[in-house]
Amino acid sequence: MKNIAAFFDIDGTLYREGLITEVFKKLIRYEIIEPEKWYNEVKPEFDKWDFREGNYDDYLLKMVYIYIDAIKGLHKSQVEFIAKQVVSKKGSRVYTYSRDRIKWHKEKGHKLITISGSPLELVKEMSVKHGFDDYKGAEYLLDSDQIYTGEVIPMWDRKSKKDAITEFELKYNIDLSRSYAYGDTAGDLSMFESVGNPICINPTKELLSNVLQNEKLKEKIKIIVERKDVIYSLKAEYLNIYGSNTCET
Image 1 (cartoon, one colour):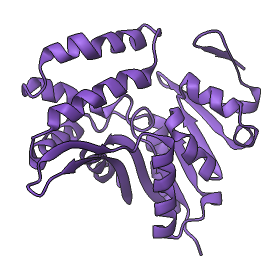
Image 2: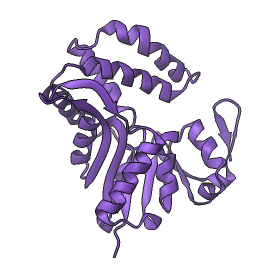
Image 3: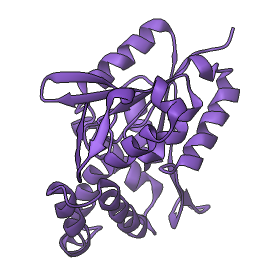
């Protein structure tokens, strides 16, 4: 019999913010990234998102590009050390819904797999902490001396996540029609399209727009919004987006 799997994005889906933000702070603290990089290049994008005038993905991608440059020349052990520190201190800051779903999938004997755009070192630590069976993250390449080269194989885009699901499907003999996927941004669309039980958690406007334009996906997807200590479950077929950042049911 084929296995059932649950594929989880991490940033904004399991973890309540972006893990790479925490790594970025550590790199500044250890003087690997100059504080001016934050104030001059990242903070403007953060402020746009914080004031709901910009895109969250633009803010994250700006950090990614600076991160790529910052770790170039560092040894793998240095980044692994930072990743362990971040997850040790922040790794429990997860959504209640996602935490409960992980527990439910474990009880059902489902395969638990993370597919995340965060650096592989972080994804590994979060996967171990929360008891996942396997994981995929953005792979920052190393040379023969385990030094980062400044090159990266992404895992935040639709194609990469689709390829990862296909790889896991074969590896674990997974029945995708009975499997689950959890995500929050448009990069997770290919995961949603691949499984029988897609679930948006606090989705971005871009993701919702794509879902509402996809009749097949619109019929089967579940939308979860967690705010404070309340969890709302919405059906896409009754949801309309209007204005700049608002929606109605």
